[in-house]
Amino acid sequence: MVSKSLRYLNRPIIKVFNDHLIDYPTPVNINYFWNFGFMAGIFLGIQLITGIFLAMHYTPQIDLAFLSVEHIMRDVNNGWLIRYCHANGASMFFLLVYVHIARGLFYGSYHKPRAMVWIIGVVILILMMATAFMGYVLPWGQMSFWAATVITNLFSAFPVVGEPIVVWLWGGFSVDNATLNRFFSFHYLLPFVICAAVILHIAFLHEKGSNNPLGIKSVTNKISFYPYFIFKDLFSFVCFCIFYFGFVFFMPNYLGHTDNYIEANPMVTPAHIVPEWYFLPYYAILRSIPHKLGGVIAMFASLIVLMLLPFLSMTNVRSSNFRPLYQIFFWCFVLDYLILGWIGGCDPETPYLEIGQVATMFYFLYFLVIIPFLGIFESYLLNYNSKN
Image (tube, rainbow, N blue to C red; front, side):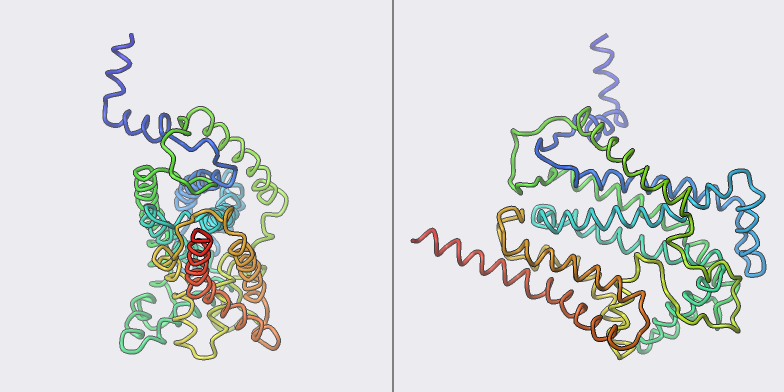
């Protein structure tokens, strides 16, 4: 029986499953913040499954899209549940990923040798944003239509290539039926690209090994992923599902916008165009620059700068547990990010514009100035103390 079990373990698929989910050596001291990556993976699966079932009943045609969503809500068996799980699942997915990124920033998970893990993670975030934006357009409500019009028009700010990009995105010279078809196609395709990126993310992570709260490399204080961490992750997932289903069953429309329950009308512009909450910090960065091209560049740069983080950090100490000065700036950054989210939902007027500009300035200063300077300063202090 033992030899038979060993023979099964040598099969490629079983071996991969065993190496990455059963016997994977995991640091014993990782805390519950490490569970958010696992939960994000589960919610990616939830979004895929619910999205496939929604696509069975959705019609990507401007005269029927809004009605098909109402058909799903009213006539399809449990269609309301599938749609609310999908809509609120997107918000939960982003929440989990944002906490996952914050944990990586706090514990220095972007440092070598995990730089590629971090960079692929940022690519996943960008793909998520593109997928979520296209999904937001599909209900073809007022906010969907005008969000598509405003955001796609931003590409026209780029000289030479801007206008052709906008025409290609629209499939014509206005947001119309071709636009909706393209967005539906990409919204269906991109989650599978995200899945491929997640597999790469996990593969690179498991090649270099997981980080830990101390930020030190250890080959001894590790235990297998199963059963301890599997059940720890499942416990976190069950607890988070209570929060998730609280929205699904009791506040299903709380995170959405009321204007999106009005059918799209190109002749009526909403008083205030607001994206979903998980886009608000980047929307605030976009609006904080008075120049259109400058705002677009700043918005994209706010994501690209995350990719550069492994090369900007100048410290050899990964974990913030041993960097008290960095902890102060980290929590200032978290507060700054929340302020940007608040500003993104406010009207573009005084004093919100000025607050957004200050918050945007700190956002870039944190990555481009504070993190490199702190690394150099801490290294200087370390050398000075060692000599004295």
